[in-house]
Amino acid sequence: MDRELLKGSTPLLLLSLLCEGPMYGYQIIETVRQRTGGTYTLKEGALYPALHKLEATEFISSYWETQENGRERRYYAILPSGEAFLRAKKKEWNQFVAMVQAFVGPKA
Image (cartoon, rainbow, N blue to C red; front, side, top):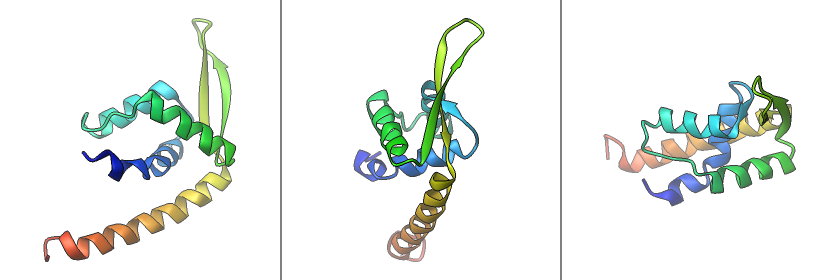
């Protein structure tokens, strides 16, 4: 899959996942891998800068949670501003898909 197509979609993917509930980094990576049947792997080098950018724009927040084994995990959760941004981006995405379908879809 062309990485350039996915590049601008990373915030949309992350916010959509976080709408399901707080997640930690490895959990996000594994969920993406599973949902795409392994066709797309979100690398740590792309994930964490994207999460930090979403946190800097106050679309998500993060917190540390201690696990039973004593290790700490950093969880990310979507904020109301992130939910509003996601709604707008989903609308934009659907318009984009409809436009492209008009050219490359079954009727084209």
